[in-house]
Structures are given as structure tokens and as C-alpha cells.
Length: 159
Image 1 (cartoon, rainbow, N blue to C red):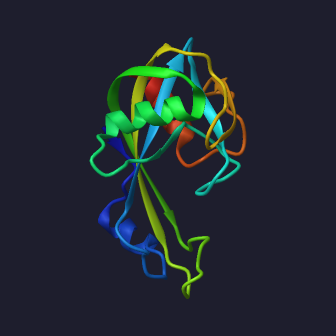
Image 2 (image 1 turned 45 degrees about the vertical axis):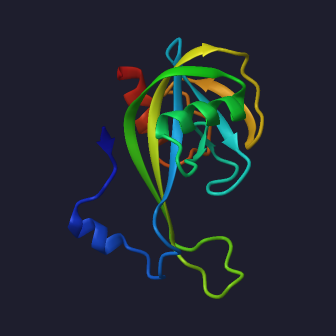
């Protein structure tokens, strides 16, 4: 599995100045490829609201990453996936969280596991946390993009 983790020297230099809000938040990205294109959704909610990325969301306690990717794909797009396999890891570190009701804002670390899924069935339609969806080729991706979408899309086409 490919990772975007920087080496230790870079990691120290890029750490946010504010304290973290807790442990990294584990999420999944459901990466579906069909006819040389990847399925993308425009996100309705933070982090990265309004940007284009893969369907996905938080892994629930006791849920496997594979089960979470399949669930999120179904909830956000109406599609059924299968054969989940690890593809990449994406770190998104927000220097200041949007919700700072209880004092100064804290940094939030999202660790997102991208899983490549086969399209099993269903009809694609934006739902739940997705404002809209599209199939896009890596050389014609919509803007603005979530973190590392182009890199993960290209890796998915090779997987």
C-alpha cells in the first residue's frame, strides 16, 4: 500500500503549531474504476466540503475498513461494490479545526485508507454526504479536488 507519509525530518517541519484534538480519525475512501474512469463525489460536509473526492467516511467502532468502504459507497452513491483491496493511505492534517466552540482551535489529523472496489451493481446517484457525482478520467478531473485524488486515481487504474 502506497503512503503519503513524509520522512521524519519533513514530519517535524510540517507539524501544526496548535495542539491536536485527539488521535488521528480513521476514514476510508471507496475508489471505484469503470471504463478507465474513477467515481468521484462533491463533498457536502467537512473536511474539504465542496471539493471533489472519492466516496468515503469514518470507520465505525468494530467495523472493518473493507466493510466501511462498501457501506460508504452505497450510502453516498447507491452503488454496490465488491472485492475491496488496499490501495493507498492519505493523511489530511487540518492545522485548525473548523469547530472551536470550546476554546482555541486544535489541529485535526484524518488518516484515510483508500480501498479499490469493483463495481458490482446499482445505479449511481448522489446521496447522503454527496452533493453530486461524476465519472472522471485522471487527466480530466473536476476542480477543486480533495487531497491526493489525482495520485490515488492513477494508482487505481494500475491496480
